[in-house]
Image (cartoon, rainbow, N blue to C red):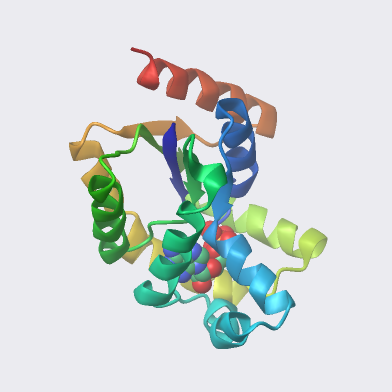
Length: 191
Ligand code: ADP
């Protein structure tokens, strides 16, 4: 099972990604988590990307794509994977399409978690108080929303045209969204 989950900052991608990956027995791979882990440990990659994440901008495609390619080559990705936060640009979309095609593989579904913009900002500001993520402040949140709307939201059309898109309403409790998402994805991938 090869899955993607997409959604604006605050849509609940990370939370639902973990549940969905567990449901299908595949690893959840979050590029955001990989970057934050490297920043925390002050690795060369972390040092390189810290100011980019702090500003709410995207890490360059070549850097991000190399990390994803390395990660997908690990043995635990043999049965499949769930990518959370990748691809985020058209370049990354084409990279992933090519990467999979070279291996005779393809995606099974692309989950899009939809939440209205005002609710997103409210959620992110609330999370800022709990998790203390450096990019959860009002200016950076606004910038992340803009970058998402400009660069990432249009990618949904690409997957819609391929018949892969599963649009899930991301409003309501975590449990409600999870149940809704499971039944929609199962219906989509059912033979
Ligand atoms: P959110 O969706 O809430 O912004 P993420 O954890 O998915 O949170 O991403 C955090 C940050 O990591 C992004 O704002 C960006 O700087 C960087 N990042 C994550 N994934 C990518 C990607 N595929 N391409 C470029 N930058 C990325």
